[in-house]
Amino acid sequence: IGLGSEHLNDLGLEYQGDINLLKSGLTCATCLSTVSPTYAEEIQTAEGGAGLDGVLRARTADLFGILNGIDEQTWAPSTDPLLPACFDKDHLEGKAVCKQALQRELGLEVRPDVPLVGLVSRFVEQKGIDVFVDALEQLLHLDLQFAVLGSGQEWAERLFSKLSETHDSFRARFGFDERLAHLIEAGADLFAMPSRYEPCGLNQMYSQRYGTLPVVRAVGGLRDTVQHDRTGFVFTALTGEALAAAVAYAADTYRLAPAHFRQMQRSAMGKRMGWDQVAVQYEALYRLAIAWQAGRH
Image (tube, rainbow, N blue to C red; front, side):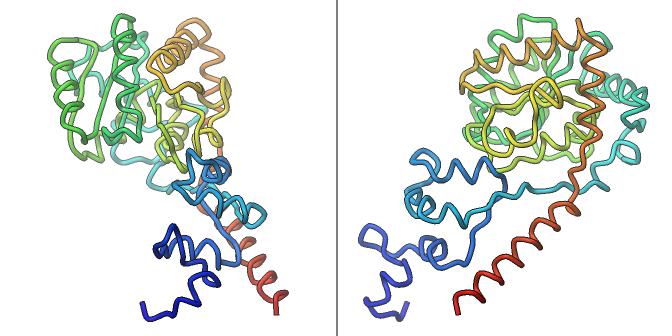
């Protein structure tokens, strides 16, 4: 790249006998940011740091985690043009209409009493698709319904296609379908996110916005945005058994404690998750960086 070897260390370029531009950026930046507070902690560990955890630990005082926002105009259940009926946290009747429409469209039995679990995801290891499949071994024996949308690893698509044919309670669609994604977010009661790692995550926030309570693993931005038994359901272990237990608990809450479930929905839907709040945090961070840089000269 036209630099003498004397610059390898002062620019932080050297990494295990090679050149690593990301390491140089992490070393030379005035301050660092990533997309959630928990992920900022995770990347300082050997498990989450991809070999650069030592560099990040050395800069822990300069490392900030700021959650992403969502487009609150696009993801707005009270005005969403892709839904058969709109609703808000104080008027949930339209959500029941969306659930019925989703059940009809996918060929599920139209039942308001059965907990409907949604999943909109890439079918890849990072998203814990294998964990979801393991959990299905237990969950398909319960009185639940599943609406799955996505694409990814061929084995997962084949399995979901087969389950759609052999189980009346399971339906999957493949590829990208924005309208159906909105309908699943609006019509499902629960939303599964068993991620291995999740720097921020967006679907849990879309789900909360639509009163569809997310069932998430306590990693990255999922941990920061979902409060167990308040705005969703949280589990820790990366196993199908742990996900199945969390979904079963959430389903029991739906059936046996409907007033509490409704209050959780209202709490989730009442959260502010737009970019306005995020922009304020980034402005403060950039002002801090300017002040720090000025203080170095």
